[in-house]
Image 1 (cartoon, rainbow, N blue to C red):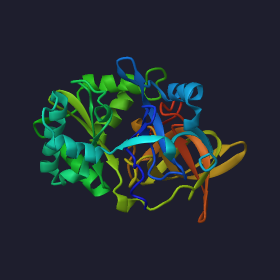
Image 2 (cartoon, helix red, strand yellow):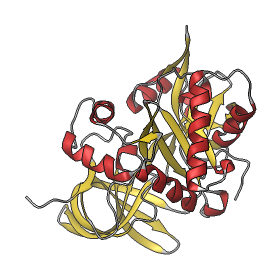
Image 3 (spheres, rainbow, N blue to C red):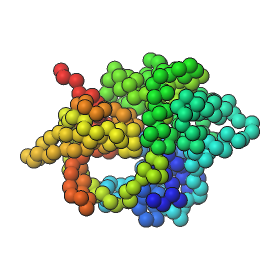
Image 4 (cartoon, rainbow, N blue to C red):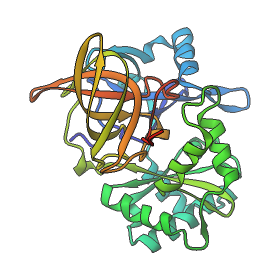
Length: 332
């Protein structure tokens, strides 16, 4: 595994000052797979509102950051290695905050929160990082805190701490859940508010610290990354709906979130045995668990590798995943 390339949750700043969030553990030759998040503005960095907006901006201003991936059968965003200005690593950034002087109130809060989670979980501080707006100084005093935990075992240990929510940590309240719901579903409502709240509360990946919402995000340790770019090839077939039993939730909080399932769907007169669900949309990570039945709407894909062919449903053809969802099946 090439540990010199950026990893999921890292940020890449281009030579023009465009800020991209790294979106893959592996990358095609000469590129870093990453999606545009911030652009330079008159008063600092401006956040891109949606995936569609980011594609439109790049098409009109910087098309060199767009390329078609035959492996994924889709148009991707990526930074050519020749255009990389700098890479910001969440773990290294957090280490820098720990030793810095004159921290802002928000930065000081991050340090105190990480130390509490590390103490309660017994996960080493070196396995934590901080990502999001603070990495590029685009945060405010009340910005949410996005923490990275490296390694699946470490993530689950910290997740248990969040589940217990001992003071000074607090669980999500109706106000914060409603705010998150409005952000996740600004237009279409693939999940009702009650469905969204039900799923969010049982994930145990979010909480409140000193009145500010925080999230913990799983990122693989280098030892957990084994595949390379192009090992799998995907072909889009069409939109389908499915009800399927979850047979393995090991990667439910990964990126993409992956669920092994057993289910069958039909499209164009053909029947497909679906063995996997995948989603790049944060809303649908940790959405269903082992032994549960999932209700799904998404893009049916054929996945081929040296080991053969199987079928999966991708939920989130765009980051907003309009018209697509994963939720716990409840009989009507």
